Length: 429
Image (cartoon, helix red, strand yellow):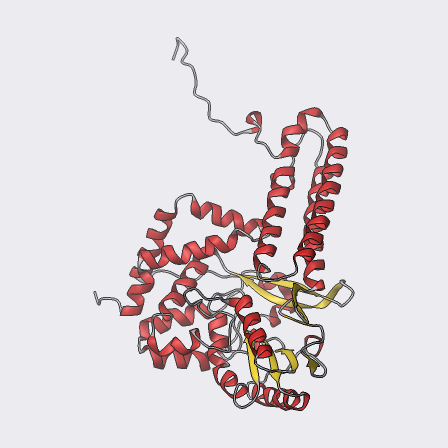
């Protein structure tokens, strides 16, 4: 049997798969999806065995990426109502996500790809440097540095339907030339190929998902890398001369010494993106350059002449998310028939635990912001929502049979557990 290529050996390694699994597990801690958390919990019950199976399948060449689930996430209108437009998110099975992450880990070891993982002007999907910032905090820091270095005007934009426009063959060719590892490239191609398990259920919405040669799945850990490879030359050209362009996946902001310079650089961006058939999203892009001293939002952050805050939209989204969890829980408690156990996901403890994860994750995301008073106001709002939910819980509890108390709380009831009692032998037996 032919020995595996270096990159394939790296992906098949139990150490690599363990590292990939830990990243997936950590990300799931703040997930609001019960299905995601249940799948992670099941894998975590015996991770060593599950990693061994994955490693064995990859080594034998028998691993296949199962079909993924397409999730059309409705976008919001300006008034907070649901829009007819949606984001085509993709949720792959856990084992697929682990292998995709392992493939990404392998690509990070390829010297020829280093410039895509360490781009000074791009921050989404970029590897964190030692003692440095990463992701949104790093992008915000880059904006502040440009302002500190004399930028007077900003203009920002969002690339419309970015992931669905990325040409997979173009990026795969770059990966193939740099890695010179055909077996690994085959695995890479499989990892970014999308097959939907619920295509019939999606109906006409299925057309928005990247199931053809153009487009990559939003939700695949490899997708940000593909975007960064495609836009690497965009980043170079946009940062030549007197302007700075900071990009986070499909969002970018131009910091310029004048309004005229910002306008000219935005025209350049439109021209470059047109080469890939991409356009800007009008509703998420600035209509004209703003002074850096004016209030402006980018990446869910409000820049307000000294203050760095979560945007009002981000705060509203948190409140709506928490309220939604409480409403679903109260509805589930009320509608459960008398004598039936309350579904655990609607119980008090499960709901409070899930809400805690949402709030902790939100706070972690915005931990670099500097308006302490605002966080105090958000805490007060969250406390008010909790108090209202607990009041509703008490009202529901009073109306139900006292025997439902443990079920409402989310405490397991021994009488409802499935048992396999042993049989006391009879004399005849």
